[in-house]
Image 1 (tube, rainbow, N blue to C red):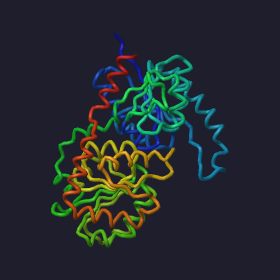
Image 2: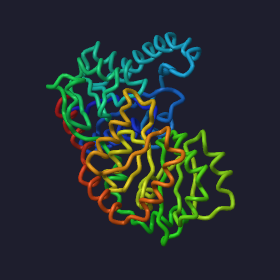
Image 3: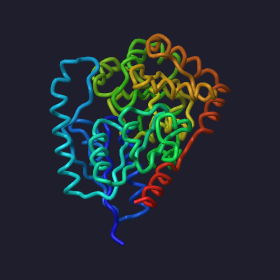
Image 4: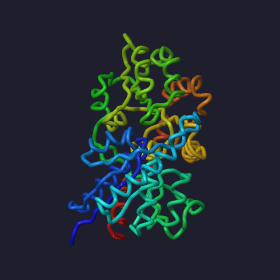
Length: 363
């Protein structure tokens, strides 16, 4: 039997890219001969991260609608038309048996083209609130993999399969100890460590909270691993000059070490971050990104807060509340243990295998 060919389309943020890579790895485990091609958006982080994971990627000239600057949308219709021509070339050349969409600008034209040609299409919706393009594509999809129940309000019920979100194997199967994590960042094993992460692109309110209250933070005896995102890294590095107990950079490639080192986490509440934190069982203070579609990050965070599995602060209150809240939590061992137990109970560690198995069964 000839091995199948699969295209995985989408990206834009780590929340789309890393689950996509996890699914690709699981497909390869089940069928070593399977051919996988990624399709992403030129200039986005998938063009760097996917080749690093050992997969080939083709880039489309495509961009999303810019809500903050309408003038930047002038070339959008042209880019959209061009991307459809690029998709046709890629599809006719690679001839996939199936296309998997993981969200992001580039998934829509690829899945739309595949559906028009009668090729099997699969969607992975990581959020508890489905994106508009996934809702449109869902009508003709072969199967739709979702993170949580209650998604029949967005998708045909017979196509839904609740799988959870695929967490990178390096995180879900990690055996790295806290001390190994601490040493990786050259920090002190005897101090409580807070991991600050605003998603793969950084988070302004979280960064400013740390920047403005850094002395208070360090004065309380805490130490810090700070993933700033590219836009904030220069400012952060200037701020920490000459200070002990802080590691700061724009991006962390070995997240398993950061999670191992962390006693507490301050984070955005994108679906993948939430899934990873459930797996690594860390007490977390969420600061939902307020401009996420349909405010889905707030929904993601509230789901955990309502189960007494996380804390949350609004983005517009974060600058002044985040550091005092995490300092208070650091002094309350029983609260930390309660949060750990409750967030760990929500973990899903085999979503990638379940998704890969169902895709192979159906193509």
